[in-house]
Image 1 (tube, rainbow, N blue to C red):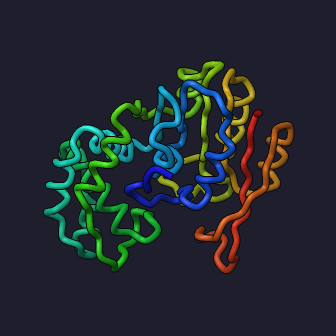
Image 2: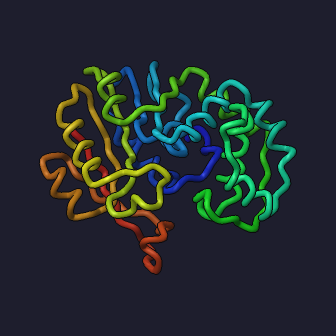
Length: 248
C-alpha cells in the first residue's frame, strides 16, 4: 500500500481497499474514482493508471482536495491558527462560507472533518487534532497528476468513459443515505445502475449487502465480503457485510 488518506469519511474504504485493488483488471489506461470521499482506494497505490480522475459531488470536499493539491502550505498555515474547542467547532459549523477564500473554506472543512465524531462534520469530538506538513506534502504529491472533478456521477461517467477505462464507485449505501451531506435518492441508485449498464469501460462497485442492491445488479459478478463494523446503522454487530460488484 502506498499511503493513508489524510481524512476519515463516512463509509471510507480503509478496511477493504486492499481487497478492492486486488480485484482490479490487469490492463486499463484510465482510472476514475466516481464517489471520491476520503480517496482510500486512490491513495492505495502511487498510481493506478497514466490518467486518473477523482470526483465527488460535495463541492466543499472537492475544494479541499484542490487546495491540498495546489496550496498545502497555505492550508497548514491557516489550519495552525485554529484552536481545538467545542465553541470554535460550533461557530465554524454555523458560519456563512460565502465570504471566505478557497483556502479558508478548505481549512474550515478540514477542521470540521478532523474534529467531529466519525468525520460526520456535525458533532464535536473531544480528542487531540494535529496536522503535519509532511502529511500534507504526501497528499499533494499523490494528487499532482490527478484530475479533480465536481460532477454528478452520470455526467462524469459519460465524459470519461472509454474502452480502456476503469471506474471505481463507492456510492452512498442503500438505506444509509441520511448520513451523507448530499441527497442520494432511491431513483439515484436506479440511475446509477442504468448508467453503468451502458458503459464501454469496466467498473467495480462497492455496496452494502442489501436485497434491493442484489436484485438490481443480479446480472453482474457479485462478490460477498465483510469488514469490522463501524457504521452507526449496524450498531451491536461485529461484522458488516458488503458487496463488491463488477462487470468483468
